Image (tube, rainbow, N blue to C red):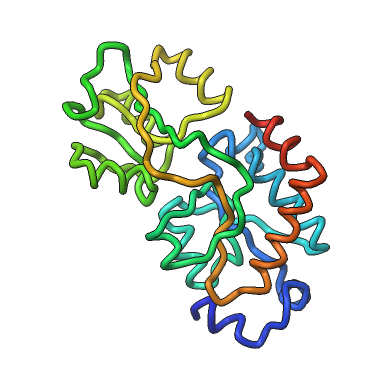
Length: 233
């Protein structure tokens, strides 16, 4: 059942929650937004954000891990009530789902990472996570790419020598420390055309979208968003 059909008779998010707690889809493989700790629990900027949103909306949310390229289809199918995974809105994505206001800004630059002396992007084999705006950008620019289902798999491909470079949003101290330890450098920057990170919801669920936007606006006004972002960046 599509999410439009599944919410046709729902008055609001609290009504939905009284039947079934809202489900959040995420990747848990995109630090600093999401990752797994030593106990296998989802942690990161998005986890803190989502838990705070659910607290403010007085609902008990649950989290489900999926590959990134399954998040929007999952929202459309009604498997998830929302997707929170450092996801940027784009014209293509907005044809499929709606996005809340941004909760994390971007400088518009994405990075090619590899060993010093690696070929330039136009001459390199580039690893990229499938289903991302980074894949779309590389396809549009005609680069030679190899697709991987997760960010971890993309980084592993670089370590294995399968690709010369990887391309994506690799911000935050966690990623920088990981790359430096492996001897990698941020070699080139290029914009994939993304906006800031936002939450994806089904196009039919206007009530949930409005409630999330209201809560995000309040979190921005009282400094909570800044606190969460500073904690993980």
